[in-house]
Image (cartoon, rainbow, N blue to C red; front, side, top):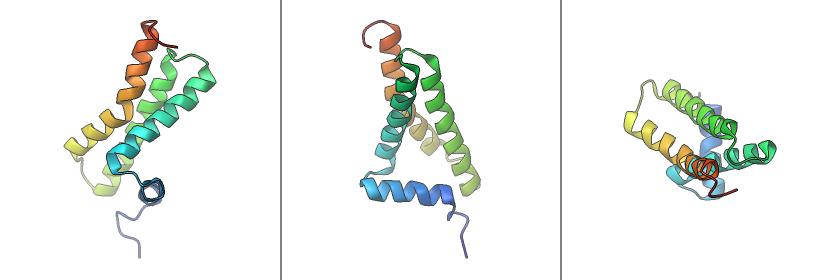
Length: 102
């Protein structure tokens, strides 16, 4: 019988971490960047707002699924996950908006 932690979402995250040999934090960094890069390629502009919004929305959705699985918010973990997922896309977006890259 499946436990409360045995969800498709969690199994997919564990599979990705194990397959890519990444720890939890590094997985967030890479997935956030992959989402952002794919969206930037579609948008054709590193300074477009919606790729950053897509990363943020995906990460917030991930955190909601984690909260539902865990039964409560784990605030320090949630904050770290959001920062790890959004930090580099935000930096690159900001640099593009400032005209320093892309």
